Amino acid sequence: MNKKILITGGPGTGKTELIRGLEKKGYNCENEIVRDITESEQKKGVKQFFLKDPIEFSKRLMILRSNQYNKSQNSDITFFDRGVHEIIAYLNFIKIKYDNYFIESAKKIVYDKIFILPPWKDIYINDNVRYESFDQCKQIHEEIVKVYKDLKVEIIVLEKNSVPKRIDNILQIINYKKI
Picture 1 (cartoon, rainbow, N blue to C red):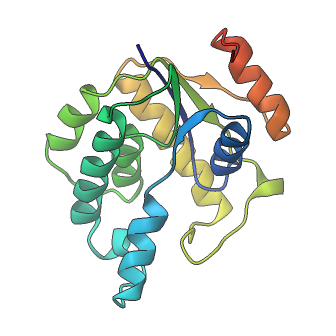
Picture 2: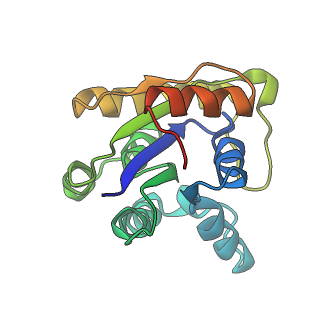
């Protein structure tokens, strides 16, 4: 059976670098999809698809992340760069109303372990896709924590540290040794 381990957190907290570090060590990883959606829409002239049409963007993202989660894996462990629950957190962050589809979809996705990376000002960088300020990053982090708490899902805070040390901490917590 494939263990599904989620790496989550607000924007710019080091998730993607951590996933890249895991990939370099030979672990199976599913990458973040938001950049692909956003950059694809930017090519069509839409600067920030999420801000222009948050519900449509979120529905598309929910389908893609659910497909990632349900994809047949050829390894005993898969790490995910972000999951479905963050979609709800982002909608809450921008204070937009949404239907029960998002909650019900999120309830169907159960990760074996969820690691959340806290906001970290020293590594935070804006770019053409990450438009949020560091203060907004902190607010999004709180929304993510709240969604997991509301859904009664345990999260593990992964302390600020180097990528190799964060990887070691994750592997120790999940008690996993690659053969």
